[in-house]
Amino acid sequence: MRPSLSPVVAGLMLASLPITAAAAPRLTIAKVFLDADETMQFLMIALVAASLAAIVVTGLKLASGKRLNGGSAFVSALRLGGPLMGLVGAAFVVLMGFIGIANFGPVPMPVLAPGFAEAALLFLLGLIAGVVGVVCHWIIEARIDRTVLQS
Image (tube, rainbow, N blue to C red):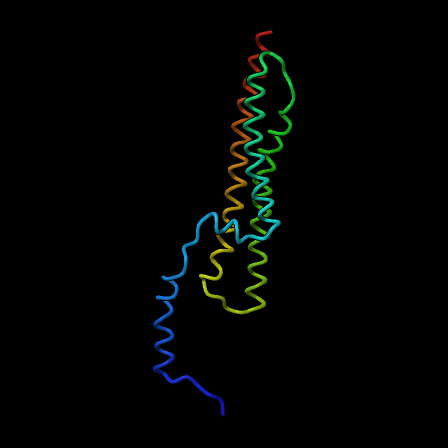
């Protein structure tokens, strides 16, 4: 004979779920990053580093005086590639989440939330990289236009 839960025990277990969920540690951006797969962590770091590098390249380009030196191709590639890389990373994380749901059945939302947060963070970092790339590209193009028109 299989042991079964009494209705009282089952009710107490269900009633304790919200308390358990409320007592769980809060999810932060740092925790999302630390819980991410190593490949996704690398992608997040690469997107942030590329954004910072675009700002440095733009600053160096502006400080170079009237000389027209390189760096424009990197910034131009970042404005187009940053959002795509973030989107690819986010799509991969969501795909793996759906495969996990399909393999293990219904999963509670607190278990799924970190994966969705990871996907959202990747997408956000990609968008930030793209925005930084666009703004830096505008600044560089404006400087090139001023330099060419003055000569």
